[in-house]
Amino acid sequence: MAAIGISSPLQESSADSPTSNTSSIPAKKIKKKAKERTHHCLECGKSFAESSILKEHQRIHTGEKPYQCTECGKSFSHKGNLKKHQQIHSGDKPYVCLDCGKNFNIQSQLRLHQRVHTGEKPYQCSDCGKSFSHKGNLKKHQQIHTGEKPFSCSECGKRFRDSGPFKAHQRVHTGEKPYQCSECGKRFTQLMNLQRHQRVHTGEKPYQCSYCGKSFRDGGNLNKHQLIHTGVKPYRCSECGKTFKARGPFKAHQRIHTGEKPYHCSDCGKSFKQRSHLQRHQRVHTGLKPFYCLFCGKSFSDKSTLTNHQYIHTGERPFDCSTCGKSFTQQSSLLQHQRIHTGEKPYYCSECGKSFRHSCTLKAHKCSKTEAETSDL
Image (tube, rainbow, N blue to C red; front, side):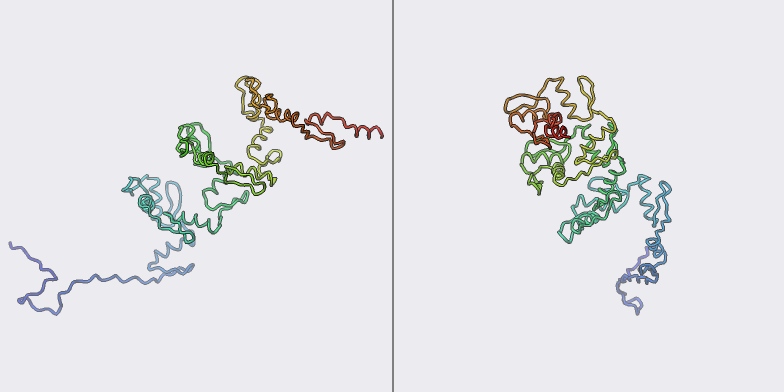
């Protein structure tokens, strides 16, 4: 049986073939005519080619979310978004990064992740030119220039640029500590605080000083430590000129000038300049004495009192007078003693003007002026 040859439509007609009015030209791809957008949204005026697309769009305005997840009850306005969400429950991660092998539920997440490898940063700040790999990060950054802080705490009025620090702050008021250490059960308000705490158990110290090689559990402590080498004290008090290495002591110092006492006792209303002072004071109400003497078992409400007490057992007198060499167990006792050498008498009788080295001597003082006035009556 002879094979049937099929001529190409582009083949020229031979002299034997009948002539045709149709010339042999390549077939051009005909563009599909775009559908007319006859379906209009009455809310915003946007137009669509199909009524089904208009209906989906209108859910933006109505808030309708007809597609519900059977696993967790979360609702969605589009069926596609529900399908993407359901992959969280199924564990299905069909999108794989060819560079590192990491899997993702959604293709858009994979695309965002790939910028880690490519270094692509398509979102640029129009104010300073800084570039970002994610649009959300650009928006957060731009708030630095605008000064915008859209997240406001309803309890204290403090404002925040983005939702993460705002949510973490709210836990100060609610007392919520959702992050728990699996080793010791201690709870934390922020994930990074838990991660830092876990290094206590693991012994990990990933932050190393480039000057001396000393290692630290968190970056903040490394930064503070390095100031020892550099001698830099970046925080300067505008009132008295005193400089500080760290922000915490600087802020605490400023309250000397402002008189601000932001830490309030909920039991008696007494206010304090520092949180640690409030915590120590609150033990007066709770009766808590968490500091125990290893020698006799006696307990104390604060660590400094325990330290002073332990000198009774050890016989240690760490506070030495630079003038005469006499030693003391407490710094307050040394200060009182030094007044013998300096002649300082800081306690004055408001009636007769007589001064004393110690407050107890002032209290025991019987003012001759007051006695004379009393005898005249």
